[in-house]
Structures are given as C-alpha cells and as structure tokens.
Image (tube, rainbow, N blue to C red):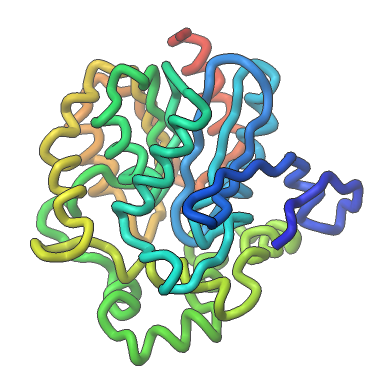
Length: 303
C-alpha cells in the first residue's frame, strides 16, 4: 500500500488520517509509523485488527504540544504485508520491531498509550526499559494472562485452534476485521471510519496478520510467546511507580471488566475511568472524553 498523503475529500477515510508516513527498515520489510508534532513523546500502540488509524483523533489532539508517534505492527496498517516465509508473526518479533523503532527514534521519557495487543507488546518493552517510561495510559488491553483462570472468548478460540475452519473465513471473508466493526464499538461507526479500519485488509494476503495475531495468543507453557507474557505478568508491578491512567470501555467482548478490575487491583494508585457507553473501540465510542482525560493527565504529570 502506498503511503497516505493528505486529502481534502471528506467522503474518503484518508481525510481523517492526513499524516505523513515514515518507515523503518526491518530486514527488508517496511515498518510504518506516524511521527507528528514536537514535545515530550507519546507513543500509541495498537492491537488487532486495528492500526494507527485508530489513534487518529489522539494524534491530532496532542500533536500541538507533544511528539505523537504511532507505529503499525508488521502486516497491519501501512506496514508491509509479508508472507509466512518472510516474517514469523510471533510476539517476540512484534517486540523486536517495536524496540527497534524506539531505539531508532532515540525516545526517552515516553508516555505509552496502549490498546489490545499493544498492551502486551509495550509493557514487555517498558519492563526492559523502565527508565525510559514517564507515563502510562492503559485502554482495554492486558499485561497479564486472562485473570481468574478465565478462557478466551469462543470466537477467538475457534480462530486460534480450528485453522481449517477459521483460516478461509479470516483470509477470504475478512471475518475478523469485519466482525470487529460491529462487535468492538458500542455505537454505529460512520461509513468512512469503517472504510479506514478495513483499508489495509483489502485482500486475503493482506489479512494474514489479523489471523496470525489470534493464533499467536499464548495461553499454556510451550506456546510461542508464553515466556514473554509470563515475564510481564510476574513483573508488571515494577511499573507501579509510573503515573498511570486507565480508560476502559465496559462493553468489551474480549477485555471485559475482569481485565479492568485486574489492572485496578495491581495498580491501586492509578487514575481510572470505566465508561458504561463504550466498548472495545472506546476511541470510536467516546473520543472527546478520552482526549480530555488524557490531555488533563499529561498536563498534571509533566515530564
């Protein structure tokens, strides 16, 4: 996919995402990121099946006073769409990509804003680099195994474990990304927002990452990535000294209130807000309130 350039067509999703593209070479693959504004850095880390488009309002709102950075995980957004032979789509590779970007940009005293898979990826980096983290904004994600021995939702279990059934549905029917348009937000999305969320996943080969992310969910010893999640789970409290803001959509079909309560239990001093009118895509449901609370949090905890 070509880098997006600013457009003035209000009927096209690119009107909502008028940011310059930047790329980091990762073994011959292009790792895309947005880098807007100046000031102390706020790094926004997306999950599956979203991309940096999910943070578009935050980027615009904060760029006047902050350096706003939002990468696209490999295979997502405007990053390259490699095959299995070119990239292994494992958590360790996700972490390596993110670490390489943070080092490439020489970022220090950063604020991490995380969502979905972005939480585990960024928390693993934060635990390895706690001296480089100034603030944490947590939104519908996990930094630990499913709390209370709960399993993953049936829809994810089927995609993760029944490849013969799930692979054609995800790759050829775009089941995961399309399904999320209806299940992840609490409110109906505008047509151009749906267009933007789906844009990178416009053909079977470009949907591989959305499938592999689910298949890579580590649950038991021996799963690729299990040791990373186990390490983050056991040592997450090492980040307790960092100012934290928890913003949570109550109606999340994956990261439900049990996950929110677990974050609150582990970080009792964190500022926390649970939104009864928001779901997993809380930045689509209640963007103004998220922006207001995040802006206020950043102002009250200067770097």
